[in-house]
View (cartoon, protein in one colour):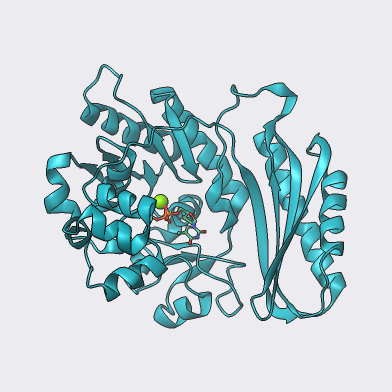
Length: 353
Ligand code: TTP
Ligand code: MG
């Protein structure tokens, strides 16, 4: 299950007047300032606006778009609601991000189609938002299926559909193929997933290494054995800020770090987690990026302790160039009051972007 245009849909939900309009969520919501698009409503996507694009580019492509700031707290709140609904349908749930999850529904008495409809209906009733569901024999194909008929989709893929539905797709659509591999594969004349599937295992292993070659050989045929990982705790919670202008002033970097830390601590308390490790990231004007980590003697959600650790990390980075971005992440999360395993899932992974 993957929510449709998640951040944008949440914003539109609380501003009904924006329904049907092109809406872009990113940074501080000011398209004249530095920052990137987190997501865009489907109406805005028609103008070519997409995630990770600079806000200024989005504004050029779509001057009529409505730009709004990112409000992680609200998206996390709704995300937790969604995960709770899914968890009630099947506790064999893998929480993979703020707006997506895998559910193992193979042991449920209802046919999968009925369960999929139930998921869509309950998510909509509980949140007012639409999602897309993919049903397939494994996670790899289910993820691709969920993407095929967005928004508000419901798609089945069986192994017998791989040739017709998956092979025509560009190589980049295959999980695990990043931009670098894409270039490499294209240079070798492989443009579609079907092109990969047409190659022998030996060729792929020779070109791309033993284990990755094996992975591509199998994945391009829709074969993927990875199980559902019912890890209910988020791995980390993070926030970062890209400065409007690169910053030379240490005080300004420290102020931003303090405010990001406050946000993270707020998020931790809201979702009921304590953290053991604090990591600070600094990206300089030349994109050189440094991180420093500090592990605490015990898990905590105390802002003072977390902030102190963050400042200690910052103190270990020499600010001899101008700073473009500052980020903070807490890891080693544990549900507070020893409620481990009973805690409802909390959003993770995508909050870093
Ligand atoms: P996605 O599920 O990738 O995108 P989406 O839900 O906005 O749209 P779709 O209908 O295609 O699923 O990501 C979920 C949220 O994560 C998204 O709403 C915003 C955030 N995100 C970022 O902040 N930066 C990114 O680069 C991406 C891809 C997502
Ligand atoms: Mg989504």
